[in-house]
Image (cartoon, rainbow, N blue to C red; front, side, top):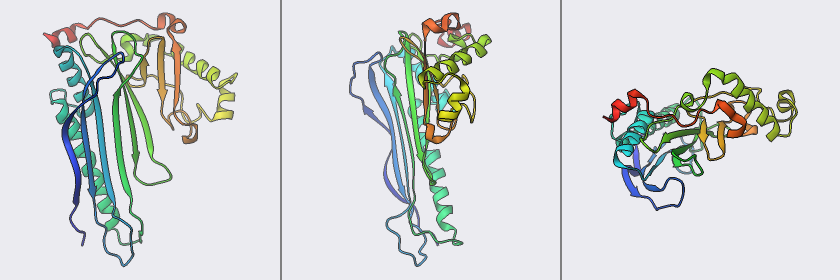
Length: 279
């Protein structure tokens, strides 16, 4: 019989004042979700040091913005995190954290309820998501770097990075098609491949594959969440396993605006639909 969950420290919807930082977007405050659950394992006659543990942490920084733009930004972030833009942002963070927490606790419970094999060690499942304001972004852009690290057993944990761009004037998400000519996406992807070859001192994609294993598991791509608009150019990001093995790590490719030419359209004005939302 499995003992009940033992709840550890939990701040599911706490707001903490952030320290002011000098950057392109001054951090005003942050939303924090931090929770730990300890799940006692079944008594199997096997000694175990400690108990299986679930740790969930989410940190979301917020910039200083005019209220209307801030409200839109928070609504957009809530929609990205929870799928519901009408939900208050702190509630969206809490819902996301609660969902992951419940999933981890259930998985650990099922794992240690299985008596078909002996486990003498205690897993610690971890989910750590830090959505921080990016520095050095293009004027008029609020940038985010969402670094997610997880561990649920195995040889190593997981890592991914989500990049997001918002207009500082109105708080709306900047999609790839808003600033890049996606009708010429093939040209853009070729630029990224060529720049990657230069960065790794390779003369061809084949050499890049042979020496570093890059572009073997997948090709470069463009999405609304893998680019960041910086002052001097656009940074494109690829997680481990996106285009290469885990050992190759994450890959970031920076393309100067001068190299992008007319592939970069600049910051668009709000669409008619977005104007209607503001009204």
